[in-house]
Length: 407
Image 1 (cartoon, rainbow, N blue to C red):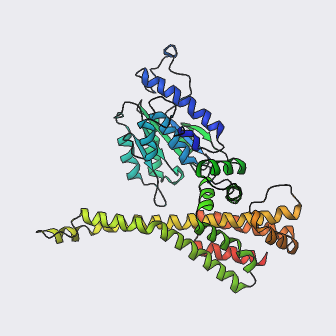
Image 2 (image 1 turned 90 degrees about the vertical axis):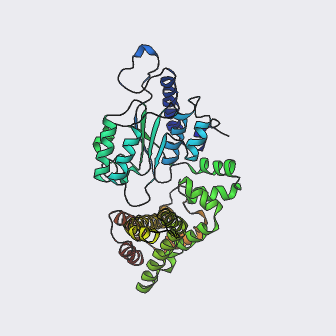
Image 3 (image 1 turned 45 degrees about the vertical axis):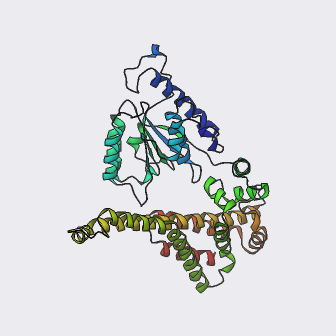
């Protein structure tokens, strides 16, 4: 097995930072010390490379969560290098390490109750003798209360607790200024198509031509590139999205295209969450006594209505998040098409995003003016922003389609 950082594609600078921090963390563990203020320079264990709170930033698909998980594995590694071979590395990457807490929000936000429980658990000493690590994916979804609970823990950290927060950026809209000021930031970059294609071929055995196409079409999104290379359904959905521009021939066609896009996102989201929803509900009902025949069994399940309702609420929130994520991926593909048209109109010497739509791009470039292409691109980007501001997706998409039709 390769070391834990091998999966980080095109993130050389971040990898160097994490390796240095993990080496210092290992030295502290071996010296029987933590990250408090009591360490002295003469101990030789402090170089300033390691700290207790980190923010990993980067564009969508750059691998923020993967980078944080790899760093967590290196912290738990018995060699301090992230060897990929020891139990610490294996269990962390598998999500079963007792001292690593992964917070991946299933809904639209991370609630204060969830964060308080997590912070309380993270304040305890690590059971394995190394580090308590808290990894928060999508830390930009922290509610104000959850952010305050996290801030208190970061301000008064335990000597063997490390917080890894993943956010798109350090903008105040993504993470509070006070939390940002107490963390070290590690920025990730968008993977170059060449590096991404090489990784798909080397790590997953994807044919070279398919890997090159998928890496370009994914626009630096590592996970999307993998799915495009390996899943025919993902490729079909992309083709349907890229067919939208040529279908916008009237007002009615614009509304039809909006409905098709929304319905496709809903279907994709439903397929992703259906099995998990069913499993969660059956597990909860069984835990509450469903199917029991003893005295009081029927009364117990009736009294559990509140817990079932709470589960349904969480599942609905997760479905909404999944729908918006699916829709956003479609909008990114659509924006890439209009970007290709614009670069063709200006003769820009850059690689196209969608190399397999060259004929459609040339036709659109000859038909539209550069100004109208730019307006169309802005309409797509405006739709993405509107959805992040909680505008109803159908309303936002219908408005976008009309703008694309009018140009």
